[in-house]
Length: 147
Figure 1 (tube, rainbow, N blue to C red):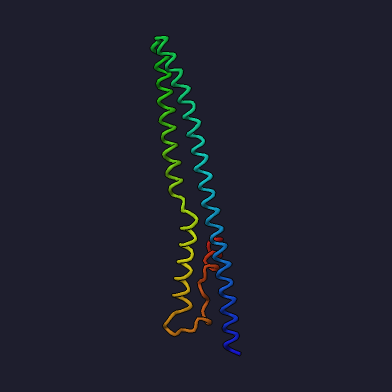
Figure 2 (tube, rainbow, N blue to C red; figure 1 turned 45 degrees about the horizontal axis):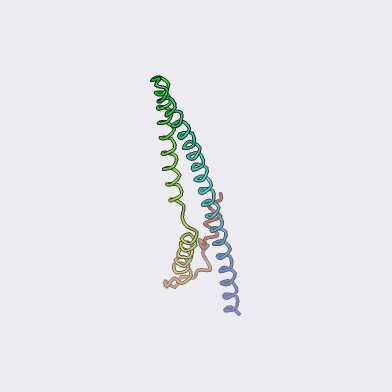
């Protein structure tokens, strides 16, 4: 009966680990979605500044034709500021999008961590009895992160 109990405990532990892995994946996907949303907001602001830069450029062309230096100087300055803001926001948005880990890479990383944990903890060749110690499962790691 002892072997059956060990097998049952191992099965329950595996189920707990799998639940924790799914929960950890959900949390990482939620974070990635939030970062993507933030990047899209930045792109929206960049598009807005680009829109106004085109408007300021049109005003600049108008003022250049009118040949009033102070007015076109103000329009040129405004156009330059808007163009720089649009470029900076666009660059920032691109960097944020590139920093988001693709979902397949996230799942692969979690699988690698999971397999490494099983190799180190469950298939430990040292002969130590793992039932006496508190295993640092991904579920425990996730619980520790929430605190």
